[in-house]
Length: 160
Image (cartoon, rainbow, N blue to C red; front, side, top):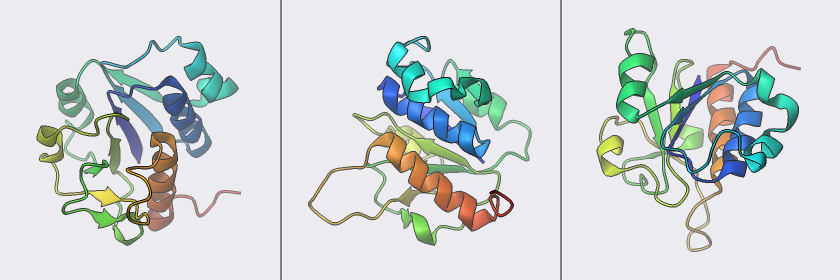
């Protein structure tokens, strides 16, 4: 299981997702361009002192990520979560995750581009009460989807 943030824009969100990845042992993939520098103090502060425990991969672009991270033929599926991908998506609690899935999240202000959404039929959404908010914060969404995926696959059965 891995998390992929496509062109993240807000440093504290990425820092919080990095902390989530440290807590779960999940690799964090960041697809450039980033809306901040990795040395950003808000990014570091949100991740606290957990950065040494984060398995971080930074990719210069989407095509490099897909060419290298997905190249070995045994890589998992791309599972997209985007406020824009509601059509054809499955509620997160009904989706059959696989242990090797890449959970892909789009940028905070624009979501995943249509050309990327078209690369995989695997899409999940976080159910919300209608008409209240447009979307859930990126780091909150990543936590919801990751823990649903870990529970579905049994990957956290031995955790304390």
